[in-house]
Length: 235
Image 1 (spheres, rainbow, N blue to C red):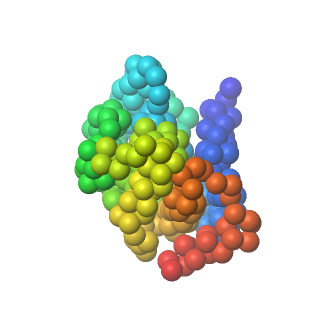
Image 2 (cartoon, helix red, strand yellow):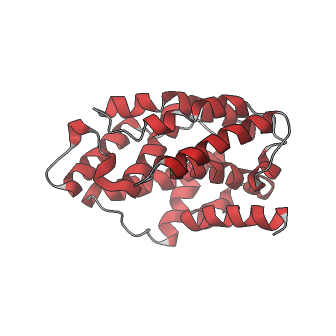
């Protein structure tokens, strides 16, 4: 497979995970779309490393590989297809590499909502620092963490719920944790337009999860279009 085809494969994999983007990307300048998707696809790789069940060794090995790869990007030496798009951007890739071990510790059940956010504080700050260069504007680090925790509870269910919020009924526990994340994840104009659009869709997923404790279908295209438009405006 050529480098171009391999990159397209990774970008398409992320688009499949986020079908809302096909609606909202109309609010993003065409010249910026591929870079934004490449960046979000990279972050999805780290979400996947965090949200595993069973033997953690393969995921840990993948994380170690990514740490080495990101350090190479700082020296303009990439091996991964995503590096072809992201490596030329002069971002603090080493800072992100240094933050990756936090994902291993974050798999442990946190005692509370505050502990869940604290476990990923260094990672959130590193993502914000890189994104300031990749998308020309830093997001709120807490919002980065909230989006990661939202993806985790959607993927893992009650396993991801802090001990203080555990309930006999798994769906009730998931609802409680989703609501707690939403309380911490306040709407913000901070961050680039691409981040704001994706955040609107990620929050929408979490809001639907908070109602019944299980993932819900996507809303209609007009609803997604309006949410993307508001986020792009910074409302």
